[in-house]
Image (cartoon, rainbow, N blue to C red; front, side, top):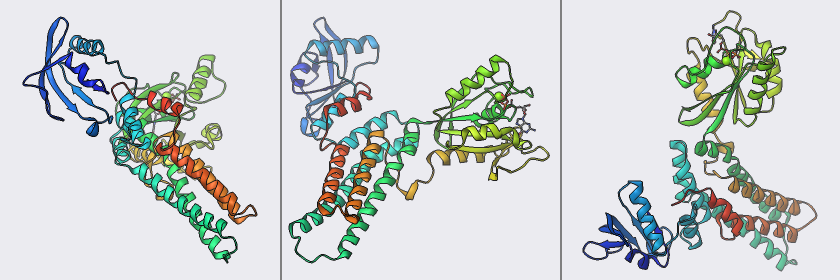
Length: 425
Ligand SMILES: Nc1nc2c(ncn2[C@@H]2O[C@H](COP(=O)(O)OP(=O)(O)OP(=O)(O)O)[C@@H](O)[C@H]2O)c(=O)[nH]1
Ligand SMILES: [Mg+2]
């Protein structure tokens, strides 16, 4: 149990009898836990002074035995001694408010708690080590330099300033804008690493969706049969594909003129896969024309074209001129390559080779706003609007960066951010 705040010592004195006196800072000591009915357990107590604690306030960690009856009793004793139960994320919120960490690191704490894959944990670690904070600092430096230059021109308008000066500034701002955009674009992959992704198998009846679903999962989970229209419900399973956590969805095969129940199954499949991060369009390679409707319906969505039944005579490797990933669900051929292709599509190479750091929608939205303001600044410089307008835009970008790492922040933003934490973090 963690207890934090100014009244810590007073509360501890009412629940805790350390054996051999209060422990020195940050050293564990065995204590009796007691309430008004007497001693009920013993465990270790560690006290952290505010200067070196997680929250930046006096903080203690109390361990008791894990029986819920004991845990409840210690909690009740602490509440009786003046403490209250923490809100979700309140420890991290206090750490932020007391200047122990910036907002990007606070968000990394949330990632570290909820990451669904080892890569997600590494991403969170990078955030805790300040990867996002460093990015914000770099962008802030770049913007500040540019603003200083513009201010200098505004202050000394009569001095000779050549076209080259503006050109160099525009080029620098252009680079700044593209690296901001590249960082924002890493969000999709970051989110997948932390939260996991949903991948749905769609396509015409009998294409082998359920067979591939089983092969990707490594065991039989969905019914397979030569009868078209075998799958009706959406079948779901969690798998790890090349260390990416994926929820796989198998769906009813698509065809016209079926009975009501099958049509309902098809509609359900479409509804439940509408938000999937990636679609696997399973195409019978020996009869690719049967996939025409699915191909038209899923155009523009993130998808992989998979040519199954690769073993069948007449199997083709392309559909509508596009190459397919060839598989044979019966022998398992091509399934490993499909696994790798799915992982690559979800978290592969980032635009502009950017290092993957962004894992919150909030960070992404703010970065896009920064990029937008920088572009508006460039437009002002290259158009008629001039230096003052350009400077104004760049100040706007700077303001968004302050929201990003929390130099400037609103209560409502903090409420939303920390409500996603669990209690005790
Ligand atoms: N020869 C061959 N047969 C396959 C292959 N993949 C699946 N099959 C067979 O094709 C038939 C249909 O496979 P399913 O996996 O049930 O196909 P589906 O796409 O799930 O079909 P519906 O659920 O009806 O939409 C079964 O008899 C499978 O054994 C393959 O790559 N090669
Ligand atoms: Mg099926």
